[in-house]
Image 1 (tube, rainbow, N blue to C red):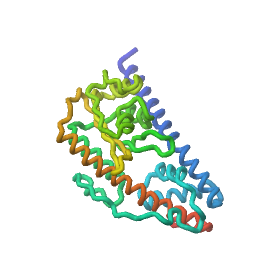
Image 2 (cartoon, rainbow, N blue to C red):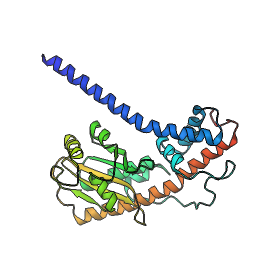
Image 3 (tube, helix red, strand yellow):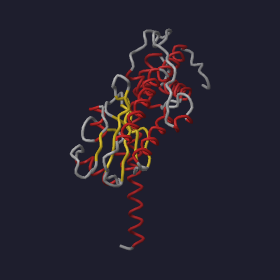
Image 4 (cartoon, rainbow, N blue to C red):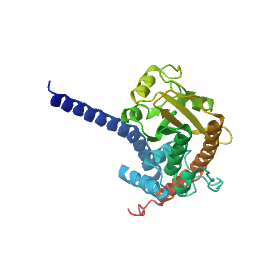
Length: 282
């Protein structure tokens, strides 16, 4: 086989792998969104699934929340008492918590994507690497799902798009609600063999996972830094900086869930309760 034929075969294999990754990503989100559409159509007696999708799209855009996130809370939140009342009539509204890490000041109010990007940037700066990811709890399936990432291969992101409660450093950090350092991926027993192979294939030789926690100790997110070399123990000042960042980020994420996400649900509920389909831009 000629060199050009080898290259063509490699390119085709890469194209097929990319196509499979994209299909898997779509399938993960599509089923949950379709479930939410069906629930909304029944609840508000909508004429079709497209109308339910429009309700979700309007709320998603107004509150800058991903469709998948909105679908999760539609499916898992307690059913509203009635179509013509507030979904959460007795909830307390709190001010957005302050964040001290520098990048967070440029995200704008209520911008979860911007805050998660700032969390990732701050973590990588403290650990001293340019590879990492942020995960959030998956309300519908349990475990953690990747929400932000940088410097990682597409195969890595596909493999770890959703992780369960065992077999990875981030799962252990979430379970123990404590920072976990893996100094050498190749030998650390925290990984199952499939996860170990996927991490090594991505060029990661060490990692450090930090749970993002509330004041009550609830894990509401995870940030992990990956390195292309074995990792020396982090200094106490590094661990303290990560603890402070994780506590601030956890408090902010809890506020976002209790405020912005619930605002989005109540907006959706108000639109659906009209019953006339006269929605903004529709």
